[in-house]
Amino acid sequence: MTDLTPETPLARTRRARRVDRALSVRYPDARCELDFRTPFELLVATVLSAQTTDVRVNLTTPELFARWPDAAALAAADPTELQDVLRPTGFFRAKTRAVTGIGRALVERFGGEVPRRLEDLVTLPGVGRKTANVVLGNAFGVPAITVDTHVQRLSHRLGYTTSEDPVVIEAELGALLERREWTMASHRLIFHGRRTCFARRPACGACPVAAMCPSAGMGETDPVRAAAMLKG
Image (cartoon, rainbow, N blue to C red; front, side):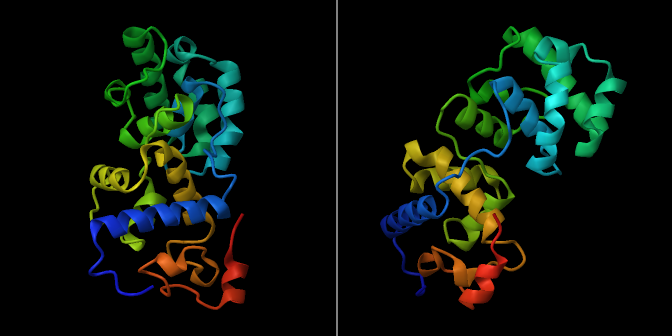
């Protein structure tokens, strides 16, 4: 891509939307990769996903929700039994405290139901803005931008932001993208970060947005070798 130093805010907005459209073609199946049936299950699963993979969480949650299917049950769970179930996800003691705390908070302050407002969600134990946005966007259909490590990395590489603050990145991405696309655009960036635009060595030669990316060429540029790097 050519030098983007003189890029105007309007040009950046148009480019960001072209990038998002290209990623929608590349990843038509982009979605939340955590399994869930209810807002409660997604909330807990997202908290458990810290420092582990979605695959590992998905292997753990069937037993978790079979034994403790709602906020009241989780609030009353025996910590030792719960730790045994959560052990494979890592940091199981802290996660046990967090999810039982979430259960108690939901019962005591929200009638056992997951609240639909970000301001309420972030008051729950272990729930930050990223987790709240996952729940809002995927359980309630409220447009929300999730700034995880992939979204943060790609936002820098694509020249959308220079900030390291997730809240600032969220606001800057929100200004570039149509609100109705916020949730899916987050998924597409996450899919791209997991499958093509890797942290250490991106597969630039097989990237569908290389022509629009100011960082193109920082990784493998040979199309054949880059294609062999792709995941998923």
